[in-house]
Length: 77
Image 1 (tube, rainbow, N blue to C red):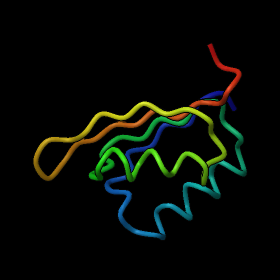
Image 2 (tube, one colour):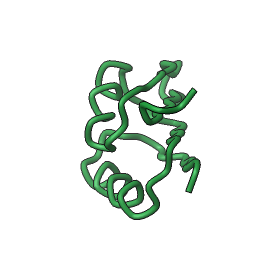
Image 3 (spheres, one colour):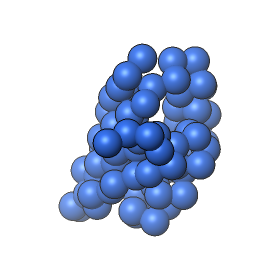
């Protein structure tokens, strides 16, 4: 699989992160895009190692919603 995209509705719960890790391990995407992260950028950046990705770009949400993150493997251009 090349890309996995998910509206995760918040990354604050450990169950959500476990589900994402399982999806990434099963499908092995080269790109992982998450919307509605509802977390601070630094917290989300630290998750890249859990997903086995080397790079990430985050956009902080406004108010109670929002937040975007794109993870990608090292070899991607």
